[in-house]
Amino acid sequence: MHIPGPEEIRALHEEHAPTSEAFASVHRHCEIVWSVAEQLLASPHLAHLDPELVRAGCLLHDIGVYRLYDADGRLDHENYIRHGLLGQELLESVGLPAVLCRFCAHHTGVGVTREDVVRQSLPVPPADYLAETPEERLVMYADKFHSKSRPDRFLSPDAFAARVRRFGEEKVAAFQALRDEFGDPDLALLTPDVTRPPVAG
Image (tube, rainbow, N blue to C red; front, side, top):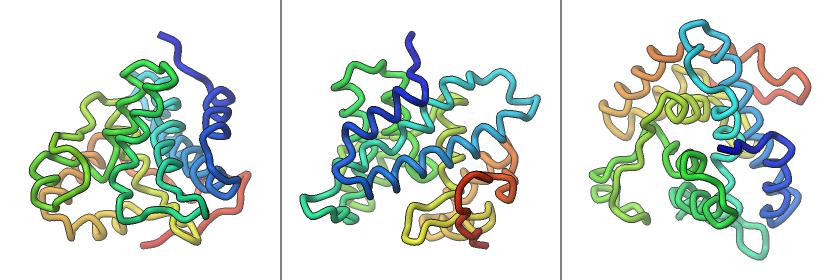
């Protein structure tokens, strides 16, 4: 299976980003998520994971966000939950294998269940959108520590745990399980080559 490298993935971002601002926001976020995952992968107990697959998953996971920008460069926040499926469709359309396409549709929150979709009337088909493989779980987990909000910022593990609590204690437990599996990243060590956003929490 061909796993695209960073330059090939960057070219995909550049091709599908509607504006330079959208590219800067989304691609930077994806790179930061990879920085988080790469740090965690240094732990010996994660040596069984495929680092190339994790890197590609991190760098591709939010590419569907581009399809939520309108002609004026405004992001459709109301339908943001759809970015995962839109990303999966985009990657399928360019011929990437399903194992890569899944990173888009299976990284949101700490996993979106069919029950979540129905109970919250989410604008996606009722289904389970759950990270299943260790690589999928790591991408989903690493994504939780950086927000693309303006200005962008890092979230400490405790800050994210507090944020996800509004969706139910089962989501807090799911996030804790990810912390137990992968450990907490040291956000102070990340992205030394770029202007660092602050850490919340």
